[in-house]
Length: 523
View 1 (cartoon, rainbow, N blue to C red):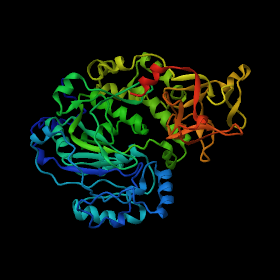
View 2: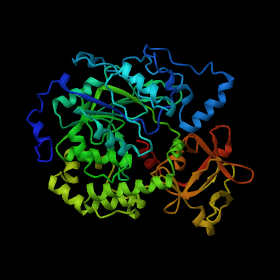
View 3: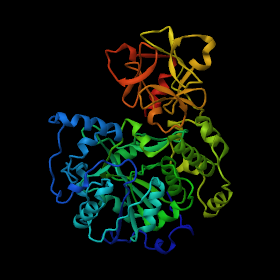
View 4: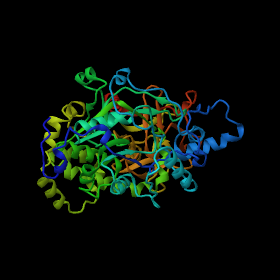
């Protein structure tokens, strides 16, 4: 790809492209510890610099079982164990052996990022200044501002020329930093991301995963697909990815500030991830995934913890608004917009202020079109995700195997969900859709949501997952929400409970099931 110069880029530095020495690159590490923090007692940090063995689960004291359950419910993963693992535990070298053949200047090691509790701020500051860098600058925001705004604030405060963003749910491994900086050194208009491995939510074990690249589907969700054959042959060298994951990434500071401040109103993290990918590629930069840089990321499968961050309906309004901005500004051709709105009708209904000035600015800056992006960057997106209306995973009546004459039924007045005899007259309240957005819908915008009591009731759809997340297990006929299975009791009320293959009240059958769509949706 030709990286054309443009007046909005860093013209003063363009002449130095490719001539910067890696050890001259100054790094500002922005530990963005505001979203989904790992639970950690920082008051015990001082002195924990030698690798120590991880705490085990086999010898959990009986008195700790309650704390274990409470922390899991609050955080969505084994936070009890996270409290007992040292900040700088020993990890095996996760890199491909061929990575060791590459030469990078030696950089100081970094700790695993953890979130400071209010009472541990001083301990956190003391630890960073003693063991990382004495001149480190630390900022604590007094209120939750969201991940996207936090990145902008951090970038504004940074004084050096390279930014590295890390979310809280990550743990870095040996040699992770140098390859990211090398990618930027080769071309400063590069956004570099590591290979994100996985932290097991139960054991907190570091799990190495196979390299994949990012795309998106027409509901605008980030999706991952296999590497091309050419990329596989060139591993472990960096490879281009059409859509990045922003859990960890490195970028030139001045360039990031130009890109990030172009639209200050788009604040939903997932939409911002797509938007940043579009901006980098369509202005002449590149997004590289760097397999020799390996960082583990913890993503709880139980999304109920999202309730901690506030009212999901309020979050949904900002979510839909941000996605509408993304669609109208960056996927502006009618044929693309129409399919997005078919996949997510709530986006079309969202409020959008006048964005004509922003659209004119983008034209003046001379961003490439979305068609160009599909032709030169996301070249196989339409093969993986054809430009078609939304295809739902299952629809029709939903019946328990143990009581097939009854159907899942909604009461629109009380918002309760229960079982009643199947009746064609009640089609409006017995006709369910398991959408490709992984929610269980009644009509267009009413969803089944797990309540704190574990009973299931109706709520406005927000597409953010959480307690509205549902998945159909085709092998066991389970309908699963956040690791728990849908079940009914003797009063015909429905609720969720831990899955039990011996429990026939947890087996359900949809009237119509699209097996191919389910397999595609699981990519």
